[in-house]
Amino acid sequence: MNWKDILQTEYAEKLRLEWNVPLAKYTTFHIGGPAECFISARSSKEVQMVLRFCKEHQVDLHILGNGSNLLIDDRGITGIVLYIGRRMQDIQVNGTEIIADAGARMALVSRAAAEASLTGLEFAFGIPGNIGGGVIMNAGAYGGELSQVVTKVEAFDKEGNLHVLEGDELCFGYRKSALKTHGYIVSRVYLQCKPGDKDRIQALMADLGKRRRDKQPLEYPSAGSTFKRPEGYFAGKLIEDSGLKGYTIGGAQVSEKHAGFIINKEGASGKDVRSLIGYVKSTVLDKFGVELEPEYVFWDSNM
Ligand SMILES: Cc1cc2nc3c(=O)[nH]c(=O)nc-3n(C[C@H](O)[C@H](O)[C@H](O)COP(=O)(O)OP(=O)(O)OC[C@H]3O[C@@H](n4cnc5c(N)ncnc54)[C@H](O)[C@@H]3O)c2cc1C
Image 1 (cartoon, rainbow, N blue to C red):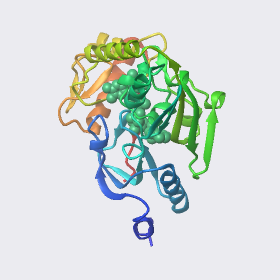
Image 2: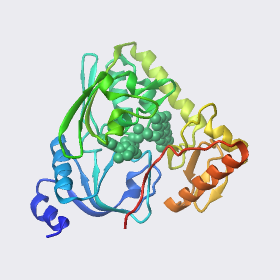
Image 3: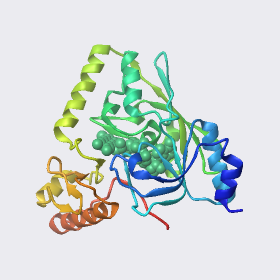
Image 4: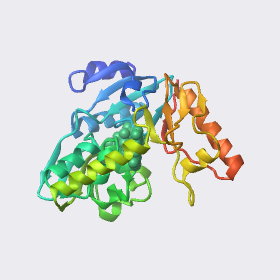
């Protein structure tokens, strides 16, 4: 029997299996071909079960959060896409501590903190990822980042063994962590906030939300900033100064509102976005001698 038959016969009642699921609807870019097998995890136990299955049967595995930092190949992804999202998003507030399942949206964790008059997570309100996807890359904005509030993370290695990483073991840096380095799969995140004033917390969240809406092209699908911040420069400024605002390939466009974003203007394919990234990179390198490095995670098809 091949792995698909084994999965279907032995796991159909234990896991929520779906086949040939278009991934475009699971990404904020609205781009991506089908997943050969798609499993939406409901618990840490299910995550572990899938990891062990993939290890035992040597099946390719991709972990999907809220799909807000991903560019997925139009041809699709073989193997299993394990979605840690909507079905695994419990959030508990105990005093000043928040314990969130990896699939909880950062905006909802931030809102739960505000509801409990806890400060420290206002910055995360407008970041469209899940806390699991956020913590591996130490997501941040407006001077805040998850490293300032995350105290402990429960995560699996690829063999399905559970690890608990605390404090310095997490090795947070700019958009990186030990979790990312070791390829760990996050199942639960512990955050420590401080008591604050609810009105002030909510006012700050509203202000940061407005600043985003004013500056970022939130009216179009995208995967956020296209490039990492090059040392000593701003990617958006370099792209704008290269005359690339509004530059379009197929359905993908360098946003006219903020050159640091590539948007899905109209029916863009992954190929359009990749071509545009290549063009922007080579133009900026020619003009300013600065090598831009994409911020997105790329899922290439191996079909
Ligand atoms: C409009 C817009 C604005 C944005 N603004 C910001 C910003 O201000 N600051 C910022 O930091 N980012 C920003 N982003 C990018 C994005 O929201 C973050 O990088 C976020 O942390 C990605 O989380 P996700 O759940 O969407 O991960 P995904 O995009 O689903 O996945 C990204 C990577 O994380 C991995 N992953 C996801 N979940 C897990 C898990 N549970 N365990 C292990 N690995 C996992 C995936 O395998 C993949 O490699 C923005 C994006 C958009 C679209």
